[in-house]
Image (cartoon, rainbow, N blue to C red):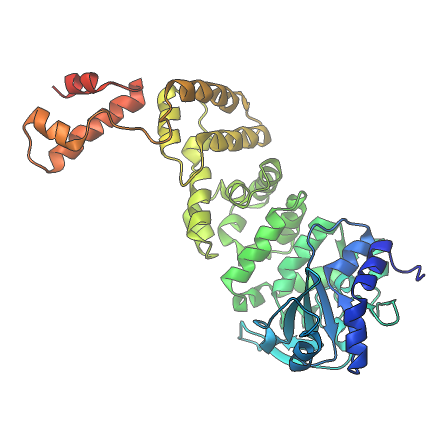
Length: 417
């Protein structure tokens, strides 16, 4: 048994044996790469089942080699050298050895295929990700000392950091995530490169920046990543509205992020709560409409930071104003978590949570109030023709409902009369 490899890695090697043998018979070598190697060496439990492999075979050869082994094959990434396959119910992505190189002003990489595993690993982001398992010889391929860096808690790039970050500037942002998620200390040369190359982020698409930031936001220790982004001034190139607030408020934002639920909208809202234009800050990263709406709802500073007790009217309005299938309780839990971090008592939101439960018992239509009169009822009662006056009357009924609770049809008629 190879003592370099963990038991989970050896099980993966055994599971992949038919695939390994198929590539060997075709004159090619196959290597396990990616997060599975890194995390299993760290002893971190992985909850995903996707496995990444790399090979000297070209994409067309990969398809031919796996076609009769696989339950399904997909080739959406073929032009980038990647063929996906499901074998015995397990998904794999197999990629030809390659080197991605970005032009100075391009957001899209050019792809060059290769035959050398060392060259393939050299183009990866960090040494801790530049390791592979040779599935034929069952040995760790680690030409850049990734395993030692894991042990020493060091974050480095296989190539010189300025070369690595120039090829794909998103790696600078990813460094913050790996620092926070794996407790890795960035190499001083890496930090210097990030600080001097921030404007290189201009060639990275807003969508890629958003996705990488969201991965950082969802970490338990996200605040450490934002400290690194602040210290290297990279934050100004990815979330400029937050960077403008200055280190103390950025530090507070990081603490809020860690205090709220690990849900994307909650984490984004906690991050941006002090920004004047939350919609603009999240909008520049091109989120989905649903995410943008949810962030805006949660980050409504006038609601979240209400210092007076929430009245029943406040609760009715908040319940009726929740987007989609959300409920006001979610907003109140968010408010309570934020209050603790900001050295305010969470009791206001916690009391509101208790009282909203009582309102639900008394008002089953709390989230979507049912008007006691229809528009044609109002028109007949007031002798009106269809028009704005009927809408104004219906709003009067709705306002009364928010302030005083449900009213019957007779009470609504008396109100209008």
